[in-house]
Length: 509
Image 1 (spheres, one colour):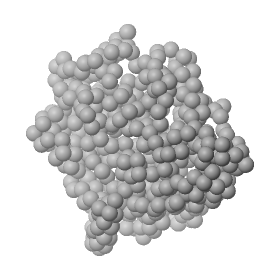
Image 2 (cartoon, rainbow, N blue to C red; image 1 turned 120 degrees about the horizontal axis):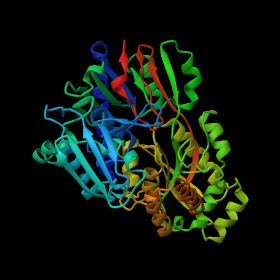
Image 3 (spheres, one colour; image 1 turned 180 degrees about the vertical axis):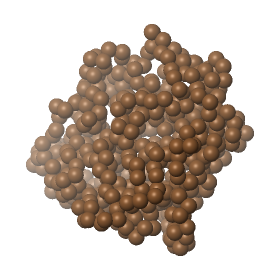
Image 4 (cartoon, rainbow, N blue to C red; image 1 turned 30 degrees about the vertical axis):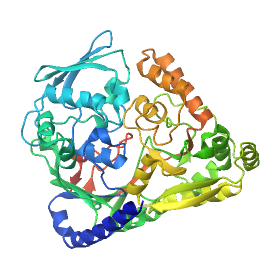
C-alpha cells in the first residue's frame, strides 16, 4: 500500500512537471494537427486481452483494428479488416475474407495473424476475456487472406464479440519476436495510429499510421491522451486552449459551459450504467440480506437528481435502457430506511462499517460518496471514504481491497453476452471485482450465449436480470449520456453508444 501511494505521488509530481513543460509548447502541438484529449485515468497496457478499463479500450480502438466494426450509431455491424464474411447454415463455421492491409511496421496483416489473435484470447492464462472465446474450436488460415473459425456450438453473439477493441488484431511475428511484455509497452499496430510514446502517469502520444488501410481518410497527424484526474481542471484546460477536447464533463458544469462560445458540449446517447460495486467476500457483505438492506438504504431518485443535475435516470438493471433484451419491469426496491435497518439487525450487521473507495477528482463520484455515506448512516452503517487516484482505485478493486465503490460500465458490443459474462458468469474477472458467485446464474449465462431462438434467448436475459437484482450482485444507480467537450475548431468528435471514439474521422481546423 505504501509503495502504491508513493508511486502515485511520484507520478503526480512527474505529471505536473511534464504538463507545465507541455503547456509551453501547446501552440506547437495544436499547429501540427495533433488532437489532445483530457481524461481521468492513465493507460495501463497496450495488450487488449489484459485490460477491462475504459481508458485502455479507447486507446485500443485508435491503435488497432478489428475484423468487424460497429457503426457510429452503435446499431449495426460493418466491415473492418474483414471486408466480408460468411456463416454456415449450422452456425458453426465463420469464413472471413481479409482485405489488403498492413501493420504499422509495413508487414502484411494475414489470416494467420487473425487466427493467432483470436486463439490468444481463448488460451492465454492472463486473458480477461477468455470465456466467450472458449466456444472457438479452431481458427485457421485457409490462405493468407481467408480466416476460417469453427465453433463448438452455435453462438448468436460471436460476430458482435469480434467488434470489441479487446479483440484487436495483433502481429504474431512482432509479438513472438518482442515478447508479450515489450509488445504491451510499444506495440506494432493495425489501426489508424501508432504508439509514439507512453509517458506513464501523464500521457500516451499517438502518431498517424501511414500504413493503415484507411490512412487517406485520417486527417489528424496524431493524438495525445492526457491524464488529468480532476474534472474541473480538465474543463478549464479546454477553455484555456490547453486541451482540444476532454471526456466526462461534470454534470454541474454543463449549463455554464454551454455559454462559452469557444467550446461545444456533446451529450451522446450511451449504454453507460453507474453502480455501487459490493465486495461479496468481505465479511457480512456475503449475506444477501445485508446487500438487500444497503439497496433499500439508498435513495436513488434523490441521488440522481442531486448528483446528475437531471442528466441521468435511475437504473434498475445491469442491461441498460436502449440495449438488446433490456427488462423494463425489473425489480426496483423501494427506498425504505426503516426496513433496511431492521434487515441489518436481523442479519447481525447492526453496526456495519464499510471501506468506501472513491475516485478522487471525479466530481459526481465524490458527491455521490457523501450522499451514500449520509444515507447509510441513517440505517446505522458507517462508510469510511477513501479517496484515491482513479488508476489506483481500479487496482484496489481488482485486488479486493475495498468494501464498496462506485464504478460504471459501457457496453463494448451490441449483444448483452459480453457484459453479462463479465459481471455475472465470469471467473477470471471475479465478476467485475464483486466476487459474486451463483452457479445457477453462471450456467444460465453460458446457455444464453448459445441459444439460437431470439424469444427464448430474451427470456433467459430477463431471468438473468431478475436473478442479479434478487442477489444484489451490485446496486444499480443511474444511466446517463456521455457528456464530453471540445473546442469549436474540432469537428466529428463523438462517442458512439458503445463508448468508442472514432478519431480517424475527427477534423481539426
